[in-house]
Amino acid sequence: MAINSKPTFTTRKARSGDAEHVARLGAHVFSITYGHSVEPHEMQAYLDESYSIEATAKDISDPNKDMILATDQESIIVGFALLTRGTSEPCIAHLDNLVELQRIYIHPSYQGHGVGKVLANTLETMAREQSFRYMWLGVWEENLKAQKVYERLGYKTVGDRNFVVGGIVQTGLIMLKEL
Image (cartoon, rainbow, N blue to C red):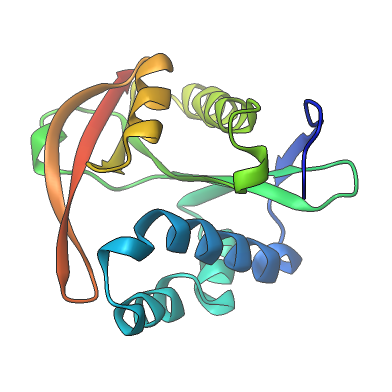
């Protein structure tokens, strides 16, 4: 997927038949991002649990989640994002009408071309239409590139949380935006 000029893409809601491609993309992006921080066998165990076709199909069909895809001109999935209702963290538990922007994953060849921004804006519009007032997300403390993107989109760091990949405890920042 070499990109020589600005790529064109469209967005759409995920369908059950997309699970295999989304799972593959999610595992690829997650591996690139976190791979250096955990042992290979621990990474594989995490991917098998969180990015299997079955887990992805469950996300797509979950009534508390909306998954949006970005596809290229050949209808190949190049990015996805999730809007997840019913989640929170202690540092934002005092707020009402929260929704989570869970996962914005973009194929490396499409990063820096506005795909993530379009997906985030699409989810924000959906959240407003569903009467949410705040959108929050978690981002790994070492993923400085993503943090900068979220800051440009208007998110502010309000706390942190631990999450475990394999036997390694990682720290994620909690970022919040008022819609």
